[in-house]
Amino acid sequence: MGSDLRENHLSGQIPDEIGDCSSLTNLDLSFNEIYGDIPYSISKLKQLEYLLLKSNQLTGPIPSTLSQIPNLKVLDLAQNKLSGEIPRLIYWNEVLQYLGLRGNNLEGALSPDMCQLTGLWYFDVKNNSLTGSIPHNIGNCTGFQVLDLSNNKFTGEIPFNIGFLQVATLSLQGNQFSGPIPSVIGLMQALAVLDLSCNLLNGSIPPILGNLTYTEKLYLHGNRLTGTIPPELGNMSKLHYLELDDNQLTGHIPPELGRLTDLFDLNAYNNKLNGTIPHVFEKLESMTYLNLSSNNLNGQIPIELSRIGNLDTLNVSYNNLAGEIPTSSNFSRFPPNRSPKLVILHMNMALHVYEDIMRMTENLNEKYIIGYGASSTVYKCTLKNCKPVAIKRIYTQYPQNLKEFETELETVGSIKHRNLVSLQAYSLSPLGNLLFYEYMENGSLWDVLHDTLQDSQQLSHGDRRPRDHSDVHGSQRSQESLPAGTPLLQEAAI
Image: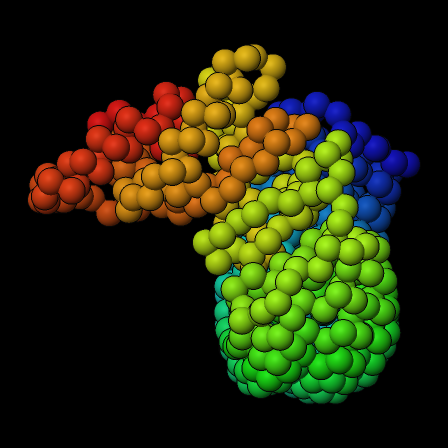
């Protein structure tokens, strides 16, 4: 017997009496507004095979008694507010196949017992606060097909025996892993997605990664990688996305990359690459995005790039290029009635496609909201280079809102001051007029003065007093240049 109540507007807590439904084999309460702890009485459901509580507001620890459900195959507790450590007893459930814990507040280290689950193929703890290193016996988790440890606080080196896994997805992004990329990863022939981005990895890119002929996504950006781009990467014939930006790579761009005919996205922004842009990139007919900005490239922009029919975004700024910009073929298209394609972000953020921004925020989904105003909403977006930006969406249904957009664009866009968050970009979009600001990680001065931030550092009397005339003018300027209701500064009036 199953109970599928997902995607309703259910609220309240899960009643303890749920344990009396002894015939339940499937309990799905996902995508509701349920809060409170997960009742221990659920462990009485001995016939239960699927327990799906994803995307609610559940709090408290994961009950260790869930390990007492003998037939439990799928446990999905993702996108809640669960805390504490992952119970070690969970790993001793012999039939568990799917463990989804992403998007909670879980802490502690991964237990070596995680490899006791011989039938487990899906292990996802993304977006938590887990610490420690990857267990030394990770190579024994031979059943894993998806291993996602991204956006936690893991440290240490990536263990050599991780190469014994036959996973299709290996995501370690957004941690503090250090040391080199293990060459043995190049033997993981089943890999479709390899994401090692936004860590502290150093050393060179192993040429053996070119053996990953079934890999579609290779994300190495946001590390400290050095050396050259291995020409062997041109053997990755299925590759769609190659992200090498924000490293310290040197040397020429290997022309062998021109063999990646399925490539959609090539990003080598902010490295130390030199030489010319390969003419053979003309063969990359599927490519829509090419970013080679902030390097030391020289020579001309190859006219062959204008023949890439699908290319929507080309960024070669901040190099040593010379000559004329090609105006033929694809470079001559300037259709006035198309939806917005580009959002230009400076502040070392590179060029981002409008569709990418929408994808990162799920079309400005409400879960990314960080503030409201009378005429606008502010969202937080983490860009592909792992840097956050605040997006202010000004509603367009009233004429005065358009005037506000124009005023803010003219005033804030023209002012550069250390006491004012800087405007990075703007876009006219179907979802509203968008302004892109530098993200204020620690809130506003209002928060500090009024103790609204937890663990905030208190200002001394000297800090509260302007130190010189420039500080006084800066304070006045911040108030005068931002329209009332600007949520980026919490509508502070000080």
